Image 1 (cartoon, helix red, strand yellow):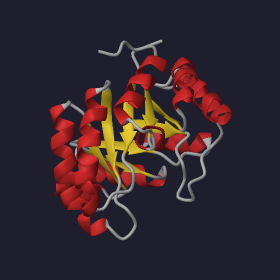
Image 2: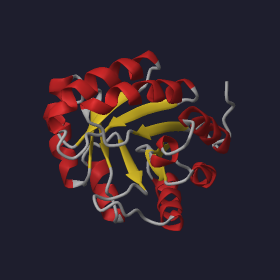
Image 3: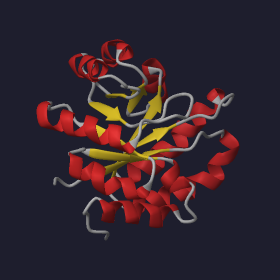
Image 4: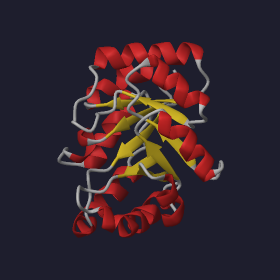
Length: 208
């Protein structure tokens, strides 16, 4: 099993929440090997995204983690984010063309095998399986494991597996995921740093 790295989804944020969230993110990043952070704006707080990206980019950069935003590649470039995460395969080609290889383009919301292959063929830097949809519903762990195993056996594009629970990290890593993404499993914990440490142990990584 390769050295799995983590990918953290922030909770939906507004500018008013940044002061409280920033130290929690810094502590979580210090606790493990986090490759990327996906900054998410709360509904109605899209106008706060510039401030959110500015604040979180500094924290992420201090730990050599990339900061991505959801959905809009042009906005990612304008705000100086490291990349964009799009929610369907059809958006990948547009994002790749817009960012011209200068920033990361990741793809989630890939419920069908054909969607994942289309995203990879379109130039996605990673495909993600198991992530919740806009309705909050996510595939079962069993379905995600099946999809990760299939992808890892055949394709070269890196695979991110979303773990709804910390105990899901170990089987997802064993299935062949290159990265494991975590959201609520970290931020809903009493101590996000301890949650990241547990995820690292689940992934077979040594916690510094």
